[in-house]
Length: 301
Image (cartoon, rainbow, N blue to C red; front, side, top):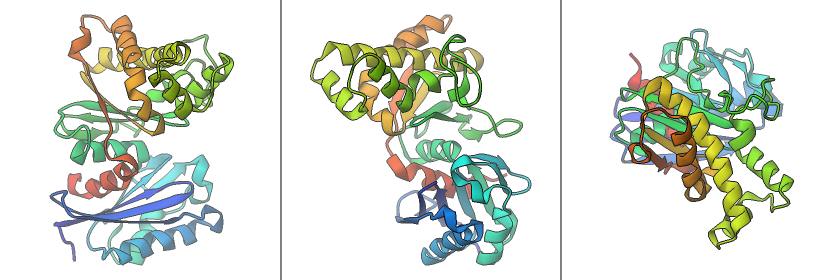
């Protein structure tokens, strides 16, 4: 029997599975985490997800965030390099069977999208009408809230902001194109750029040196921020966005990227002033994914 006062979410990653129960008002919450052990196969992963949900007292809907491409209609993960054993596995159907609910009560979504949903509900973007969440990590992920609703586009590929072209002559991206924003402004890219410049490639140490006043790290991070801003400007010109929320591990350096982000936005946005943009930090950390996943069921049409 469904309990609309309780929401349940899963954040399925390559190394771990985070699960949580949260009150519909966003106040009380309980969280658990286990190793994913993907190499044991899809059935074993599905068993662990179901067990986590049951341990949390699952009733009603279940939302799941996955780092890959989703076929929402069939309930499949169609492309997920870090979770290859679950590709084309009927995750919705199998979880529904284990939890004795209908497949329509299981919601699959991309992990960047559920993180955006979580931050909009209870995090740094709370209450914003329109906001693009950008996750800076190994790559760059994005999630778009329009009219206070998650927007995924016709095929679910909306807000793949990391693959906006910033420099057509830039480095080759894993997607096959050149100069994608994630080749210039992700954590991976920033570390590479630091190494190429003869600087410390560890971003925590590089950021600490910049905060301590070292000019070379400061300049490098400003340049990385500028490329990030140049990419965000394309979303501004398409959607007239004013608000961006920055998260992910490299998002901890937002204070050092901020000046460059503003420079890049102004450089490539027409008719806007610097103070017309709001660049906000994410606040939920690693809980954003499962919290946003839990929210999926309550937002279903």
